[in-house]
Amino acid sequence: MGKLVVSLDGVVIKEVQITKDKTTLGRRPYNDIVIDNLAVSGEHAVLQMVGADVFIEDLNSTNGTYINGKAIKKQLLAHNDTVEIGKYKIKYLVEDGTDYERTMIMKPGTRPGLAPGGYQAPSAPAAPGFATSGFGPLGVPSGPAAIRVLNGAAAGREVVLTKVVTTVGKPGVQVASITKRPNGYVLAHVEGATQPNVNGNPLVGETVHLKNGDVIELAGTQMQFVQA
Image (cartoon, rainbow, N blue to C red):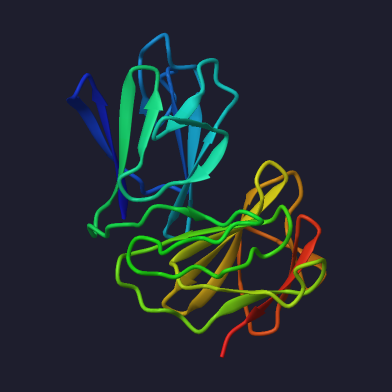
């Protein structure tokens, strides 16, 4: 279970357990997390829990929402991320104490090096302009599942799902996450006006369990989920 630690100038003001599917944050008193400061919009941001994952989305606030110094619209939170709203800092903590690696971005035309924790990234991108990123507990062994690109110039390429969470897609266009669970892998919509397709059908609900051979269509790229 995750929690938020709200601080101002290094002084902890409050701690909030994330127990609801949606947790709102803002200056107005009806928010779940109220920060009474003019730098904070009335309805500033919302946190959405999808399984064990927590996403934060800025609600078109006046001063914006930042994670680790970078402005975001919607992003999956990782252990120890710091959300910045005005002068307030909100640290996200996963209470099992799991330590997460930094997110690794695979960019077209580059060869990623050895990531923290010893994971050797694939040497080729999934598709031109198509990015994948993953992070998970240090020392997690490589899993048997992968996604295989079916169309475009990178057809036949595979990305092994070694991390707890792997995000795929084109930032700003359409992004989804594939999360490793004890009972398998689930796909969730992260960003974009339209839902990703699974076997030709738009994603219904927050998540869908993936089965061997499922075909995912995302940002014009078709990928097949492969699990031994």
